[in-house]
Image (cartoon, rainbow, N blue to C red; front, side):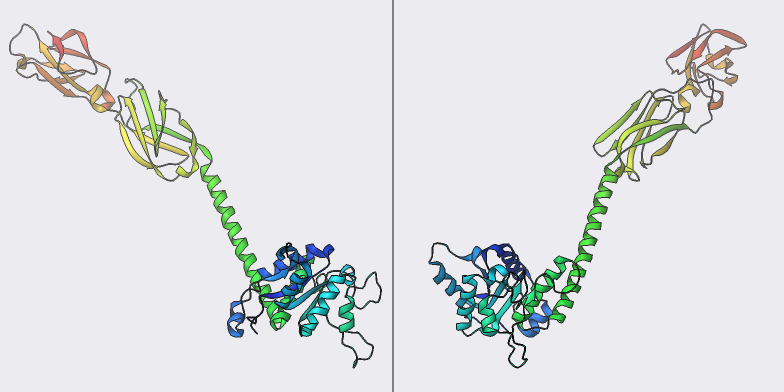
Length: 383
């Protein structure tokens, strides 16, 4: 079944003004329903049942009201009557039913019960308009019974009120399209289940992404300690002017005058940097500088080494009255060395034996002064 091209509307929704809220909901529910692709293709049916006419939404109030409504009813393939004790007494609703039947569309009227009881005989509960009861009379004799079956928006199926209302609207759509309701409903249930699963998965993904964003953006403290790996010498001074620098993208975290016996705490480090390689630099008097890339962790140690040349490389000159300084016997820190012809002395003392000053003797005579480290070839020893 396909919508005849002569019809502008799938359905005309007739109701009493006090049921306007329900009418607008029904219009929206029908127009927003999307027919499963498999059914629309095999039956050559439209995927959407739109538009439906609901006069509170669609009528141009500047036109003659009744003439306008008749014209819209003529352009509608189906008449959906919202049945309630209020609409049962409505002259407009009754007149609309009679006019639609006069158009030869008696079999295309669908009562949608929003309140009351059909064929109750009680004016307080009767929901079918008199025009419906007159044209579709109920009789105890089955041969004379021509009652019309309505769809109750609040009582179709089991479950919540919302679930019943959705079933009711789908029953109306099934009637309009000439489809089997159970087949249509089962497909709708599966589609809604898939949609709920998809929404749940999306919600979980969003929640996970937000949680990860919060987790990795949260600030933490990093404890970084410079640890001396060479043999410690108690005769040498402790590290002076030591500095640690951690570079995080375009930001630097700096710690000055650090203590090698305790870790340095760098605060407010975004957690997202944990595990990533960052640049770490160390400088300190008497130690070899470090400039390296290391994976960032909350507890870290960086190995540092003494600069063996700073206090261990002796380079001085002899200056005195005696000629030929290369013939002199010179002892520095217990090591015998020979000066060059111009009096230059060079000596490397192992790290474990280094001091900040060394006594010097020349030919068994102890000089009055010592060499104070670090020293260079411009340092002079007078003899």
